[in-house]
Length: 235
Image (tube, rainbow, N blue to C red; front, side, top):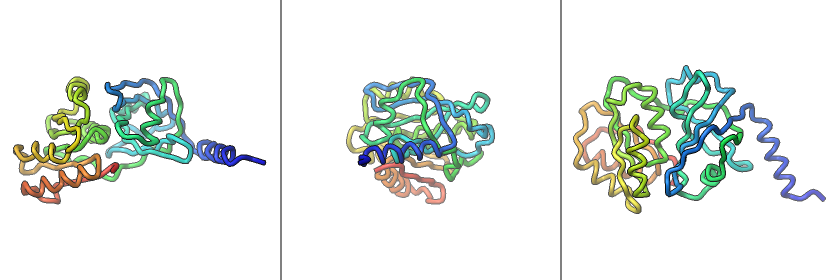
């Protein structure tokens, strides 16, 4: 009799084989403690990078029947490479997948698609969120092409990651804010003492509870909701 496990295994194999694209891991950088990963990948079948005008989302098969969505950043269309920034501080299929990755591994993915919105031109961009939003923020900045118009803050849950951020993210000039528990309150405190440009556009991304809290803080500060774009990635 065929076991249930083998049936599932075969079905997962069929799902993977039905996907038209395979990527390859080129390099992995880990922030210690190991809860945040930078993963350089090659997407050899993705030939449209030069035309990306919005951040993209890529669905990667991280476990049988299980996909996780990531935002390619720092892409180079000539050699079809990009970087994924993966927050693995919370247990789940995506976190388990990235922890076991090794250079040279291959993975299945569906072709990248628009992630719904892009940067507004010729305006100050304020990025507010947590480390799970870094890929999207970096993609927005790459498309906009001028980091002088970027400001904001990002929550980090490990004290050492403040320094990692400052050292490794010079092209995304946000203020890292350490918070090991009440991230919403930490971000509220930071927002309350800021002066934003009258035409600033606000991008809120990351944990859904944090995103809701930031939106309330901005409205309390008198920011019109029409200047706020928000997307929660996880609970």
